[in-house]
Length: 353
Length: 178
Image (cartoon, rainbow over all chains, first blue to last red; front, side):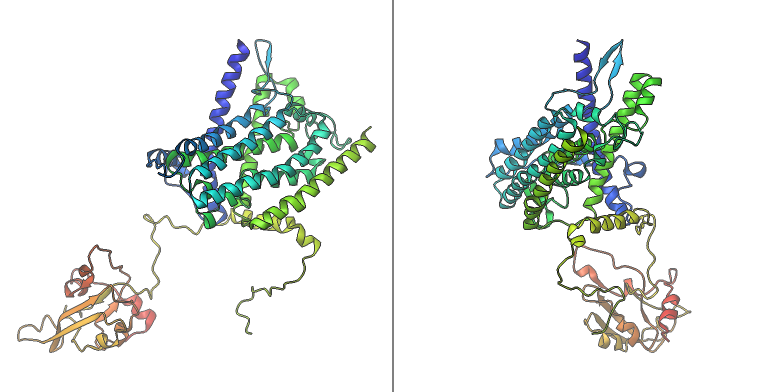
């Protein structure tokens, strides 16, 4: 019973955090864009404009809801729902921190510790493309359809390289569970000899895999330089051309939730998740609940950094052409990730055992 | 060909080297540039509170000047209308009557002086043509309106009021008109 209450509370908190982060990511995006272009950005709503997301959200809700006459109404409404639900579902398997302790019982800061966690993430993320595809198709609009087609083909192309780069990480940890992948980065010395506890991160073993994964994450989130499904200049918004009001809001919102979640997953896979140097020492002297919150803070900070990184890239690099996108995915990233798997396998076989 | 700037770069369609093909160093360089811009001073002015100052040579709404005694300078010679490339100025001259010496400086004055602000291109040729120091372009902005007729400005809008004289000394100094 207690565990049920804890899990429900955790789900609610994660839900609220995801929504809150997404809301403030829209504000952050505009601020980052402004700073990088020597502007000020939104600063009228509240001090430094921190109430801007509320103004934006209110605007989204107050707008007229338009469903095109020729659209498939059920699918038209279903599209943004699927996209939002899948982006929120992904956070279920992420280990957000070390275990909490109430009344002598330990509670893992994770909604569901399933032993195929990373496969679950991939399954749900690939479901997300249905939201885009259904939405774009149901709009009955050429541009929306083009955007949807681009989104689906791009997702399929990049999911392959993403999975391959991930195999190397799974080979190192020997498990598909995200908890195991994170804990395996918490102990042991870096490269076998640098004695900093909690810094045995996969990024130091898998730099190439990390870069491949990062590029694929950009493509999966439909972010610049891979934002071809919704490129404003060519497709007037792509798959969400026909959407208005909160349905458009859900699409835009889900994109930011996706960014946050993929930031958290990248941190879990390559940057040690909730581990930080000194965590093992702190857990011996401090209350486990405080340690859990600290570790959650560490993961949160890493995820937020990646959200910033996503924005940073967006305001630096121009968009790919479609053939360049396909060429990069199939001819460069996929072979590179296979080579990475082979290298990792060879090194694990000859040096570790 | 003359080199116009020192920053122009000759583009060569050569084969890229391996380092260039990696793209990542170039991306890192670009990201460093955008990151540096985060700490630069914003070029924005918070508009309603702070207004950007006009250049001294800014050419906005016209003014018909009066002299120190409050007499209109314009003598309706029509040179401004002739000079106007947009044909925006219409003048009707009239003779000064006895007892009007305090209103008009010369024996002839403009009974009607109209500028069509929709035709005007704010080139300032009227100002250059004027031999009597009568018309100047100022840093005031022609206000927007819903009807075309309201953009035909007559003497009531163009001639400066005695209690609200328009300062054009800065513009005179900048242009050396006299």
